[in-house]
Image 1 (tube, rainbow, N blue to C red):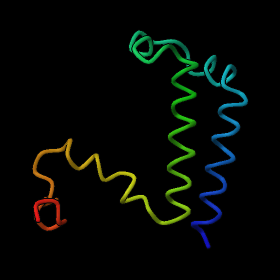
Image 2: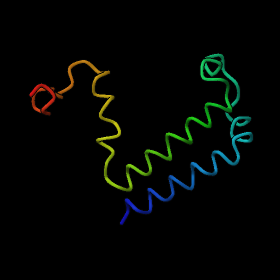
Image 3: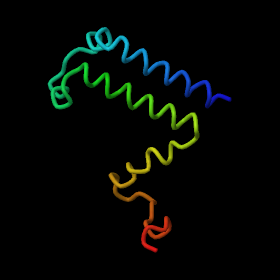
Image 4: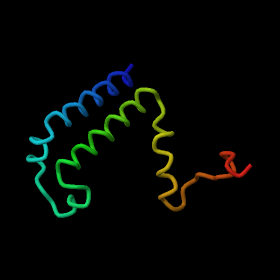
Length: 88
């Protein structure tokens, strides 16, 4: 039951991030590294999109599928290609 509530709250929160991105961007402020993603307002949009998809994945119980590409970024992970059937 808590997955449903948290997932819906995350989707509503991502909507409000998009709706009030100017106020949120002014609250966060501009940093030099934000220019790489297009500025503070685009960063807020990207965060809202990530929160929305993460909330849907959390709601459906598929966060491990959503975050599985991150396993390739960290060395020494316990993920084995042969055990997943990728090499068969």
